[in-house]
Length: 74
Image (cartoon, rainbow, N blue to C red; front, top):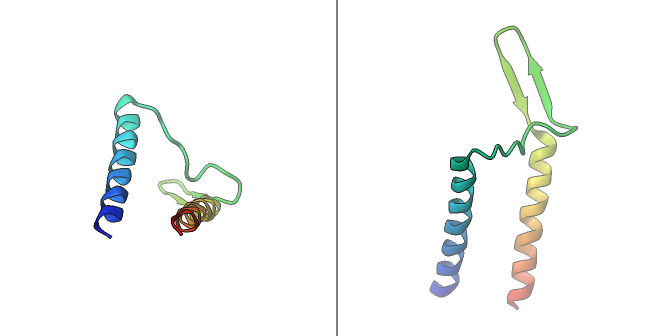
């Protein structure tokens, strides 16, 4: 189990390094709040964004990744 946990920590660290590099370079990753199904409420002084569709898509992608990893581990 320690080797498996170590590999996942390594992958997570690499993904965080890549994300940090994108942010540092200035690549704007507008992933949430900009697709149909995301609710945006604008008032005079406030903006409220509820990314419902983005969260559902993100959840499906992460679930599919974990399913494939679990299936390939057997």
